[in-house]
Image 1 (cartoon, rainbow, N blue to C red):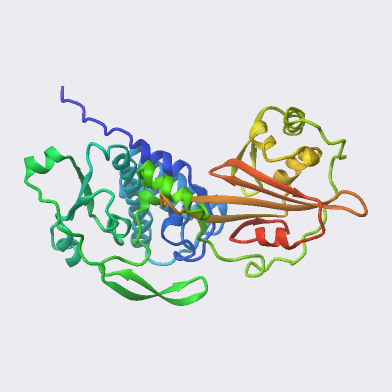
Image 2: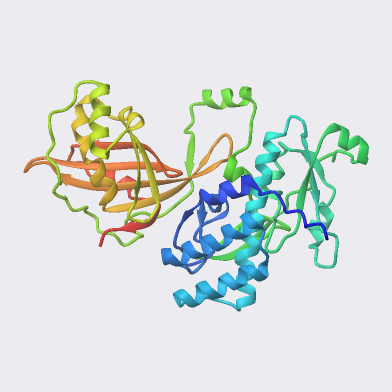
Length: 406
């Protein structure tokens, strides 16, 4: 009897990353830029959630089971037919772009997580190109470049470095360097800025990318997904700098999204009772409103939201504790849901945060502005303001509009 072919082990880091991605509608491939793709799943020109969800499942299957491009093309044909999707380009080209880019980026990000975990034992990375007739000249020139895993060159040149790029990195220990005779590069290859013109959501724009790297690929997908491990000393120095932790990457607001300036005042479904006087009482009130100590809600855009009563209680003082009863209304019936991508200034990690906004009338003289924030499907914080100053909530209505009430 012939021996069965060994099955590859599941690439856990790549699988975990892809499962955490949030579906977003886009019209162009430039609607999301570089590191934003670490947190969102998009198909350029796909605006219907059901269509995007089917493609995400097909790509997820390819990553989890190691299916081929030929198998993915069967899924591609089925999805296109089911949704009547009219896409740009030929079937062969479009299916290959979706499959190749998503799978390679997921593997590269998962590999980076392993690199960070083993960095103390395997502190060097070697650039490895496929040396054949299809290899880009500069990628061929970079082949063999060996630098510390913390070298800044990997922030822009960690592969893949373009459409259909087949380059990878090899992790090395001190013993590997001696055994294979690999020398540590004296310095990183030069970064030569090159001006390129692309079609952005705002129209044609000029961007600068390092020579040899396609627009949209001049970033480290693993760093965006997982961050880079930095020393405690460096982290402590960064904390003492007093700077803001996160830098917003997403533009746009309610004006550019064509939304009305004023948010309508909804009538609450519940009556606001007396405010609880202790943190324990606030937590109890939240549990009563969500139906338990912890609950997973489904947002109107289809995404999950885990709410933990104890976590939420820490963000509400006794004066506003009674308004915690409004939380289910905010989750189930917001006025808008916005998504913003933010990069951690120290580690480079990119997160996708969602904000839900809503306004309710408490009585004839008072209104409450409600804003909830979540990251990676987990409730982070919320704010309830009984004020007539709308400037605060207008500032929250920014980023990528993912859902809106008509």
